[in-house]
Image (cartoon, rainbow, N blue to C red; front, side):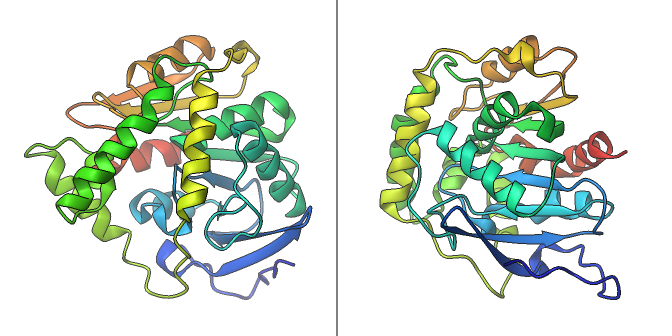
Length: 288
């Protein structure tokens, strides 16, 4: 079971120091981390393809955790969570629901990136009462144009990265230009700031299963996003090669009264490249 922080514990607001916890529900032990002041509605972070707890940029998490209880978690079969990776985004959303309910929450805010944004959409459509506010970054709608091409782009960039001994995220998340390359290196270095309790890497089998789930999501009938009435913030770079930037516009058109931010000269990881601008905007959006 999860250990509950007592009121006399100091509040941790640095993701690099966030305690690692586990909770078991539905036969799966979920690994998660939490930080920020307890109480009120938590902000649950939904992570990207092939990502574990160690893939969240502390420059995004920490500013939100200054004033909010933040929870990050490994989906089933990922990192330190047990079980096998689901082969559909919808099943991932069901697992997220199980995890959130096991922690005892009836209302959450969601911060999501990439695959996490797809999971978040499926969750909010199935359980609208659970979610108060929604942040969708670097993502697209079910059935969105060219989402199923993520697989080819991903394998190609992993090959390029392997040949040059670089992190695939430097290719997948950032433009390969004078602005993008240093932003990519800075991002990858920030992910190494945590030195204790690092998460297990995703297995190759699990990674391939996630890719299949994304492909299936991309080839599915669209969801009715008019059902999403929550305040929604959508953000991306203007040159997202993984989940094409136009899909952020598509989400914005389909989710009533949503806000859209597109950052210039940046890719899938636009929010990480522009963390100094984006983190305060996200924190303010999630406040209150």
